[in-house]
Image (cartoon, rainbow over all chains, first blue to last red; front, side, top):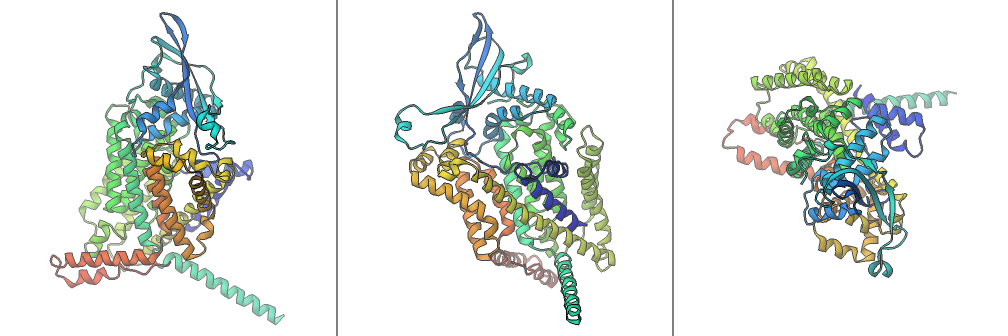
Length: 187
Length: 400
């Protein structure tokens, strides 16, 4: 019985890993129903490309001067200032910012999409506080910038001159609810 | 005709022979006992490291009003049913209680005190926290959760644990305190099963069966020579060995899929990926990172070495010596990742999963040295010859 379970489980694990690339939709459905949620995982660590990209965000603020759009603020640089020189980083410091936008864009189910949108705007707004004009934040937009993979980082033009940067993905302007302006427990 | 018949018969003979051998391998004893114990200790330590890292931000990660609020987490847990104690209550101190339960369970698993129970509690803590903070989960979390589930089925407490020490001293019988703990866990399980978010049926069933099985096993083993007790021993060996086989396979699967996914990336093929990876996450030692990144040759070598290591890992396992070199290489790779990228939890989790592949010889030498030291120190307090007699069979030979 235990052996049978182990064999089935091993086959399912194989099918789960193979599913996105080569196996059929049926395989994907069967393996997912066997393995999820406990065996949910992605093993494509730092693959196919190693860099999650820089996350930048900007907001629209309704204040005394009417509606103002802020400049793009590099949240990854801001985050790395607090994490630099430390070896013990929390889950939030490692994953919250880099994965919030991809997870929102990957959400298909409308209910889940709405949840991930709220999550994304809460993650962004909590990090933008103090860096944007005074007033009520009504909308927020995020984008991910990646370096030019095709060029070597040691090419002389990149050291001195301007670094090639590409917008890999961007969100639309997302509505920010009043209750999502205040996120507790954020450092 | 007769030749073919003879051949057939001999094939059938070898087949039944192979079947018997397989059945023997499965049921005669628990394989890789020390490796599994090392995996147990490693996983407990890595989850403790994760909890230590999250402690300053526990409010924002597992609290009620973080970026991922209690309401959002509960909705997500309802729509894709998974087990989490955190969604049971929205009172302010509850997440701290669950967090502390996770810490205590990890320590219990680490020292191996009532190890099977510790496995259940550890898995409960792991699932409660990870399933609650779903958007923050990454590879290390998955690996810890997988390994915790496999450990649940294994006899990871038979070596290097308080349980093993107690068994050596000849006080293996569970007294009334074992029954009390068992009842308390039953009550806790009942709360989970009847609560608002019970989780998936098979997981709940597995937990309840593990609990009920503990009770029955305790009852049956009070007479060690009975048929029930011997049957339980064989069945326990089989379950343990099946779990060990899965753990061995899981490590291959992780390395191979991580490696082949990298082959699709342009930067990995061109030898620049490590440059970006070192700047992607944390930078505990910025000067060291800059020094490595300034050398194009070094970065290319590190990138291709990583690729080679991960893709070739399954092949190296075919040859015992190549396997040991490969394990040493992964050890240094993960030390590098921990120090250069600020991922000690991830590295520890990977290394403790790898430990199942460690060779038996050095572990056995280490184990016997440790236990002989223990016998020396224990000798004055334990004058009975029975204790030292019993300490020798614990050094059972292990397959390579």
